[in-house]
Length: 290
Image 1 (tube, rainbow, N blue to C red):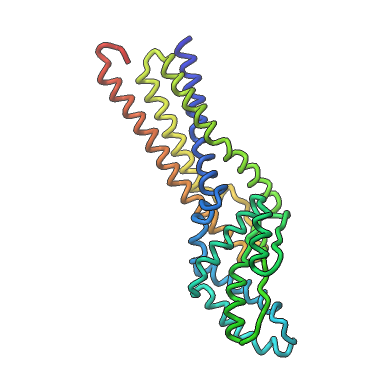
Image 2 (cartoon, rainbow, N blue to C red; image 1 turned 60 degrees about the vertical axis):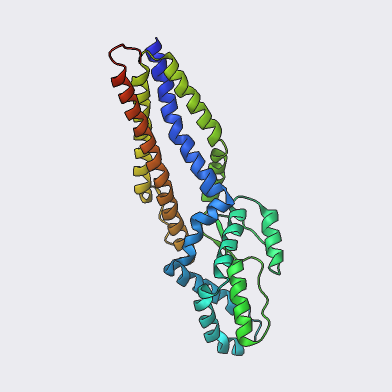
């Protein structure tokens, strides 16, 4: 009976541990605004993404000059030059980070912060409930400022320029994942309690420790394998704006790489526990106390 009970407790601990790690990663790297900015920040330096961003900026600026059509055609080369060089401006990294912060606030529902950010930019902030949204307003404002200096005329900068990068279903999924992330710590505590209980009731504790370590290592390896093949589980969305596709694909790739590192640490930790259990078993095997 003790062996069966110990096995049950150990299985529960093994199953809950990868879930707790996944929830912790989501909480720190996705739900956390700073974690999200650090995760997605390098996308702003990607050349393909910058090219798509320049196209989106050019399209927006062409409709915001306030000039007659005949004059607007004359300044199009200036617009093109401005948007192509916006990523080289000293304030670009700060503007990109602010775009990510606003986008995070839109995705996770902090609409009061979005509105305040939009008002700081000179217009009322807006958000969309339809799907996952990237707000490139701060970058557009930076481009508008550079463009205004070039032509020597004032051009109104928008408060928010939302670009949909995901569907409504994906927005709902993110909200569900946010709820899962919030219970990562309680799940970890429960896993720890069951692991201790498994050791307390086990007949051979060193063996139980080794088996739990092996189970956690396998769980970490399974998560790593899942991240290595994540594209097989993500639906293809080739339609829509190029900037949306690039942002979505690049962010998913970075998230998979980042979580893969967590999975490796989990597998390494499980392996270490497995080895410790084997060593303890070998050291105490003669007297049978472990």
